Amino acid sequence: MKRDLISKLVDMMCDATVYALTGAGISTESGIPDFRSPGGLWEEVDPMEYLSREALQRRPRKFWGFLRETVRPISDAAPNAGHRALAEMEKLGYIEGVITQNIDNLHQQAGSQNVLEVHGHLRTAHCTSCESVVSLQKAFDQIQGEDVPACDQCGGDLRPDVVLFGDQMAADFQTAVDAARQTDMVLAVGSSLSVSPANMLAVNAPRLAIINRTATACDSLADIVIHGNAGETLQAVVEEMRRR
Ligand code: NAD
Image (cartoon, rainbow, N blue to C red; front, side, top):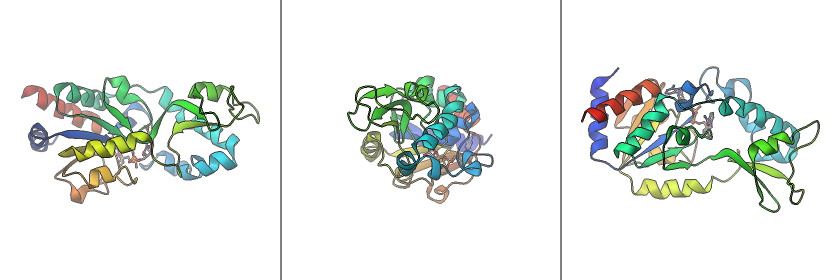
């Protein structure tokens, strides 16, 4: 464990207003594959082909079936040490909150209060005609044979409240941009920082720290880079915070 880097990171965070920016890598230790690591989802299929707005419109049966299979490991997952450490940092006053690219709800389950979900979430779906909202599970329950989920109010098409390739960003993204403007520092964790526009929150941060297992697209811009697992590294960071 790189003690000197951890101590330097805590020094930086002491004097700054900080948001954490998390990606799929913080949840791999909860058993949810990321997209780009070896063995990640991207290796098996091209999510752009299956989880896009166009796929939902053109091949809804295939879209809903793929979505249900993709989210199965997410519904079974529990928060890990990394999620819990970020929740504790918020309680200790070291971070304002978490901006997450994830859709797995694990920050909330770990106790984080201020969570901005820039790519939406998997809790609900809504009707594209009358805007009625239903639980995503209820929509999944309607998938049978050739049937795809439909609104029980008006019969319109349902869509999940997650940002698909080809969609605009979720409303939380604008809130995150506004929050980032008031922020001195971003602590990016478990993200390749290659997905735009979410990665702009890291690119434009006055100060940037990165915790990631492998090199990211923004390492050369960062003030501190710690290559390691999110769980043990964040746990060590929060232990250092508690000691101070
Ligand atoms: P990514 O797959 O592009 O990058 C993940 C990064 O995390 C990689 O650089 C990898 O080396 C690193 N990593 C993996 N496990 C790690 C660990 N235990 N500790 C530290 N680093 C680790 O993910 P991204 O940048 O978030 O972009 C992918 C997009 O896919 C996101 O926008 C997100 O919406 C979506 N996604 C979400 C989930 C989820 O909700 N859990 C899972 C897969 C994909």
